[in-house]
Length: 173
Image 1 (tube, rainbow, N blue to C red):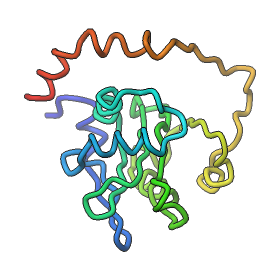
Image 2: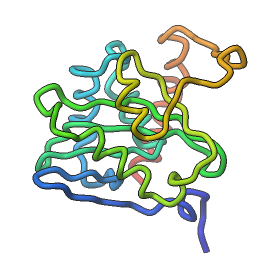
Image 3: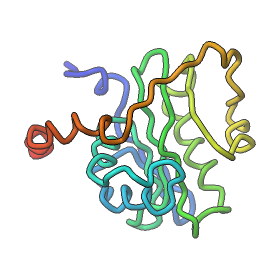
Image 4: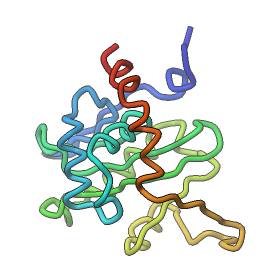
């Protein structure tokens, strides 16, 4: 019997296109290199510590794009596996852009049965509206209904740091 919702809805997936692979199997990925990619080329998380990004990868459904064994892109989905997902940390390394990799990663996402027909998948983008429109994304129908609560980076990451030893123990199991 399954021990978690994740086991019911999500197995690991891997796709290949030419010299690139997209995988949800994080055991095949150097997560530190993937996290460093986010720091080097990410538009939104320049101040997020690498260990926080690794924890975010591990606690989400993360699609990593590899060139050989080198992480060159990713998208992370935060989800309840039933009604909603939030796509975050979308990035393709600068020297691999223009090769259709964003499209490849999103095609992979929508080949996973739980995400193919999910009721709502949200994302934020400063400049890639045209790309995401190709996958059915559109401006929020009622933006006046949307709200957010922002905390400083220090406040937001404090719980992670307060529980760092417990998290380390769980990773080592």
